[in-house]
Length: 406
Image (cartoon, rainbow, N blue to C red; front, side):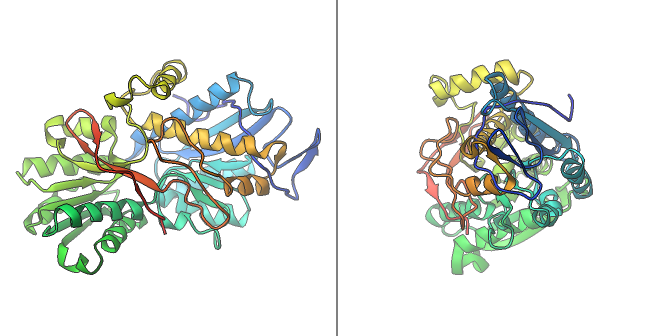
């Protein structure tokens, strides 16, 4: 696998006018744009503790390759340069500086991770480079007043945790809750959302919290401590490596809490299978796209179109895993913005169009889930639905739940 791709796709977005932008063929161009090409940058963890998430970057490259084969965006091919940062903030900053200053990318698209995106946010905003459709759900990515060049894609971690809190209050009102979370903004947002959702009952219901560092070898001691608290509900807000460890340890100790698992670790291939099917039955998460392993989608045109694309452009991808759907759908959002920009492919106009998405419907998002933004709302996706794992796939239940993400 290469960590740098050149992919071409058909996209249109409204552009901005930059001092460095040039006008060609009646259009206005920012860095990385010509009559024949649009260069996008990306960082992804193809190695390191969340290397399984590299499936997202490979899917994005594969979707842009499909778009390129179809003629590109208004005749311009997408040159997608994706570099490995190993989920290490210093490596992310180094890679992004190279993408901006040497490769002259138009924008950064779909970079993965909370700490990694935090490391580059000020640099990109200071240089007025779009940091679009981040693959992390932190609240701080929806702050157009202070960071007008930064926008996330997926639902917020706070909104997701509020959904779990609502379920607990409705179905487990006497619950004693334990929380395992990463010791950064990723983990803090889940605890914040849980407390917000529980309201004035939070202090009574949350009986124990434990955090971990991404450099820790395991979370075994944290799980033992949480089990010892007497909790009968567990929220695991962890990246895949530690989520799988937590699931195994919970099972091995004989603890049987109602277990909520953060969406980012709901991957069947990276978490549920490695943890062991018998250990995962009954775990609850929240979803916003169609899990390809869910048989209810198998006979739909949307699934079959995705499947044909996977087989042709992303053949090494796991057909049962959600990474291929996440990358496919995020790339479709980027393409929609580029197409809306027409021949005004400046950084300013790209942000203008990204902040003016109206009820965009993507084929592999759950029915009712849409992508919408505005100048003061940088939270494109706000709806999720609960799902329970049966040892093989995630089964949706309940209704689609909306949240503002603020």
